Image (cartoon, rainbow, N blue to C red; front, top):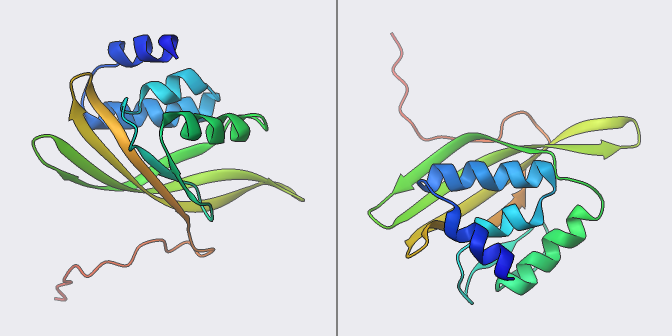
Length: 149
């Protein structure tokens, strides 16, 4: 744990930088780098697609370690929607995930919400909630007005 806290203390930047480090850690299967993105708080939460709510750094670490036992997680954030305040940021992300199927690599979608707080250590993730996306290419429905000319 001490190593993770030291790494967490050296992680700098804003919520966007922490998010980039989180996805890089997933792609590298680097548990220490991934956990350095999280706040040092007993109430941090993570929900993997179809899974239960996981609370606290020890439990969250265990779930990612189990996932990494099968290799890294090939997930790329796309089409992020962001809401920022002085000490909080919420990012809703469409994750493009490469999964190994019976016919080789295939693409799947995950819809995730990542919540960041500005802590004494800097910006840190306090929640990651991921849900399975749809099988279609359309992963977003927007109520944005459209002007036809």
